[in-house]
Length: 290
Ligand code: BG6
Image (cartoon, rainbow, N blue to C red):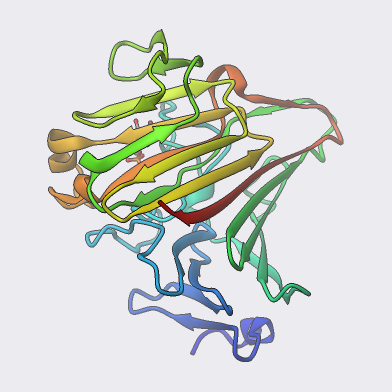
């Protein structure tokens, strides 16, 4: 059981809210097609799995579920900056904040939605997050500038995908774009190949990206479609051997089972929101048999 004030958000047969062993509150969602779990800590989707399929999202066995720490895996929300910022935590504060659950609903098509709000004392503006669990997983981060001044920010849905083996994974849709190679002094490079393969650490910020990307996973015999709107960047990351060993909350061999393809607005694509303006970053994840 958990905080009584949250029980009004349960949906019999579809949505429960419970405390985890580490004391965090987690929503568990069941639909006709899928199962999902979302922690209020970070409004963090930690699991999505379609019936009869392997999990879509990777979650590290060593993830820590503690205040002030981001969950390692699932979909951390990066906001309002991406990467390091001197004197502040990497990737912003949204992923370690305790979000407020505002509403849950069963939609006419049978999907289940949860709406979260980033505590307003934390955020410089209003930030809502809508998670919809159905045949697909749909995530929408809605930022509204309620101040009198323009607000510049970066955002990113830092999705960790579970894969059969990283050696059998390719990412498609980025040919012809420019990326910032974070492992080569932020050099700007052109993506010449049609597909991205993985044989070493990769950490790339792709700019001005198309609205549909695809991950092909021969090992799990599936492809994952990433359909976005309001997303101009994609970050492709795998820590490979040495960086995995350096991360305390990530197993040494886990780089083999995951790939991050993140969707958002980073670096040159950062958002300038005028007073009163709203921007929505939307990501829909679908799986298909290869
Ligand atoms: C990626 C960055 O988005 O996140 C990488 O491009 C970084 O450089 C990775 O290592 C994980 O970041 P963190 O802060 O969760 O360890």
